[in-house]
Amino acid sequence: MVLRSPCALLLALVIGAGTAWAAEPSGRRGAAAAPPGQASPAQPQAGSPQLSIAAVVNDDAISFYDLASRTRMVLISSNIADTPENRQRIATQVLRSLIDEKLQLQEAKKQSVTVSEEELKKGIEQLEKQNNMKPGQLDEFLKTRGLDRSAIVDQLTASLVWAKLVKRQAAQGLAVSDDEIDDALKRLKEHAGEPQSRVAEIFLAIDNPAQEDEVRQVAERLSGQMKQGARFSAVARQFSQSATAAVGGDIGYVRADQLAPELAKVVAGLRPGELSAPVRSGGGYYLLLVLDRKTVAGGAEQEPIFDIVQVVFPFPAQANEAAKRGAMAEAEAVRGQAKDCPSMLKIGKEKAPQLSSEGKLAASQIAPEMRKVIETMPTGQVSQPIVQKNGVGVIMICGKTTGASPGAISRDEVAETLLRQRLDTLSRRYMRDLRRTAYVDVRAGGA
Image (cartoon, rainbow, N blue to C red; front, side, top):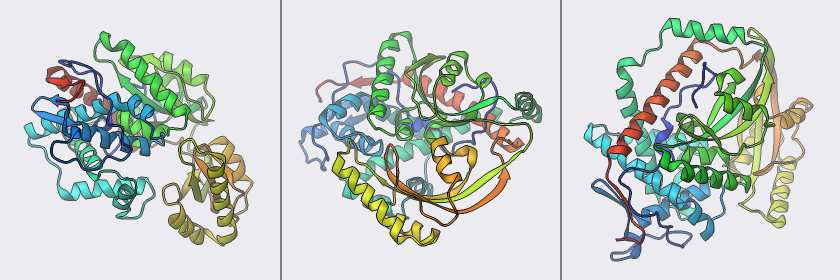
């Protein structure tokens, strides 16, 4: 998202285009085919139809097995029901992501950019940490769900080399000057006291006018999936073409003047937790989610900081009443077992590792409805079960302190925001140029 002035968003470790939805490549012929119908693709044998070619990208091929493996991974990570209809709906977007990754890996090879085993290991560890998994638990997670580990490794490798390529391209003009930081801080001070919205985005680019209808339809399909329970952050990581894809689309708190007018108007009309319809702006379509809203006074004001442990038992996609009752019973059991924060965190890591976590949150960083619960809770007491969109959870307040508001932005944060914006713009331009010069043949029925 192009902002008119900086917002408090730290620079993402990996540029999100590595997992982005790709706009239609030039040279494309034919229409994308849906992946094979099996829910859990097994390793194909020689001569298997799964080894038929779904797409040719310059000198490399993408097989239907590759497409089926990645599609299943996207469905599970995004909390989308694994049905033939849903696989068919997202097949085109997934195939285009694979095409983009091939282009990035080919460019990395051309530029002699590689990823070491140590970098890949750290990337896997970061994925585990983001998903509240223990070290090494990702392999077990993939195995129990019939997912091919190579689908994760290939995606991560493409993201890492792409980050290096973009930074290399930007090396000459990457530095942010003190004058730029001073100007940004001045604007922030001038607008102190104005309402701010914490916004998450999914951006789908349009590389040429002929793609207008197609990209809009893709945005509408993704919106529909999220209204049926798909997680916004996971969909953003897989399909958004903004650098914020790496952080689930979260751009942080922004004021109306920091957004393009058409986006600002939409954000102003959304309540916290509400998803927008597709919005046409700049070079493509946006899906916007308002996470929170607050008003920040000038200066580094103080606000409550809560040290929280939460244990959440997730609902499966399209959960029935029996599944919901089961999750509620699990949450009730935690209330009877947890005596303090360490014991509650231990229970969460054992019984619900994916969504259980601990950490410190400022009051303004907590969703309004949840904030009402937390602000009235005594320290060391487990809450009543809280039904959320994705599951049933319980929380415990481990401690309360007072600290600087997240609205008090430092020079380093401003510099990182300006840097992220430059990398984001450069990444989009670089990827667009690779698509325009590539030979891409998408096949309708295999080889």
